[in-house]
Amino acid sequence: MKRKMLVRLSVVGLMMSWALLDTSAAAFAQDVYTATVVAPRGLRTARTAKLTLTFTQYATEEDAAKLDKIYDEQGSDGLFKTFREMNMGTASILDGPTARINYVRVWPGNVTTRVIIVTDPPLHFPRIPGEDPPPKSPVDTLGLIQLEVGDGDDGKGSAAEVVKIEVTDEGVLQVQASARAPLKFENVKQEK
Image: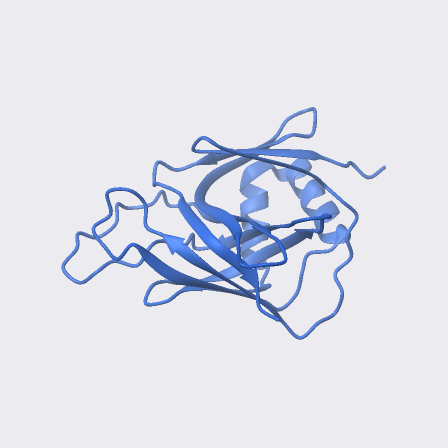
């Protein structure tokens, strides 16, 4: 029997929850989302940068079931390994890093659509020349991006560096983030 999860993520004080829905991935050429990335507090750099997410495909219910089985059999390490083998697009910050999008899942709603994205490596805010390099990340991390997108350009989101994923007996997904400050996104919209 398929296990449906109520997913709750706790990432550096950020709480997100959504019900895992049966959504199918329609074939499409590509979808592009853009956002303004707001610099974390204390970072000596420009206040904002542009984020572009380009999806070449979405995860299906079968993909989700496969990940569920891998987690049951191999735990967080197996899940990280499997995510790294997937490729569903690219994420880039203007004048900053680019990351492969490993997993994309979309949950349409009446007012907003929720998009969850896993990237490798995690996204980081671009640095200005002469600025100290960012602190070293733990060796085995992935990026987790969460977007809430409506009809206009007032969507929001965040990105964190994930070091571990666990699923409780109740089917709750728990994410352990690194100490690096999460990124915040404003003006998230889907390009038409």
